[in-house]
Image (cartoon, rainbow, N blue to C red; front, side, top):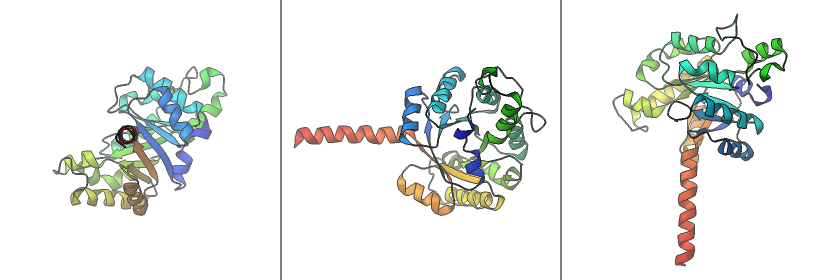
Length: 255
């Protein structure tokens, strides 16, 4: 893993970082994100259909253009994705401190954690790098990002944030809206209150926090609240560009 691509130090020192969430992790799309200047890419293996092998190719593409590859994934796939070279994991639906502690331990080699040691992996440069350096660098540089998306998580939020090794929280207002009984309305006062409460708790705990923004205006709201972990969705950006391109062609024909 190339430490230059890790966003973990910047999350920990309060810097703003800018990423894009990709559900179809084709290497060419990942490369474009890097050339566009993003800091990181979130490869969505929660809602995306990609296999671990496909994600491995996307991870390599990210490293090739200076992007930090973060994989949004469930617990069982964390070991393989880290061995493939992911710079961090983003785990959905974390609701307890016990879960949070397992995620941290899964991302750290012994004695700090329970990650299985292998030096033949892409993350360890297939055995060509120094073993001790790989262990130390990985334990320091892999970012642990937890998604807070339910009322149950909010009830245990302070305990979750107290777990050593949690680098950031990503708030999920859509799932939160369903959990709070206002399904699909991410702007409902109950949801907005929960998001604000989560941000305030993260700031107290010294843990970076962020969320997907669906517009520049929403991103400005997030910044005003104190968020520093910023993402937008590639499908949203591509959709807007495609619609705009079609509209401009039709306007040219009809002029």
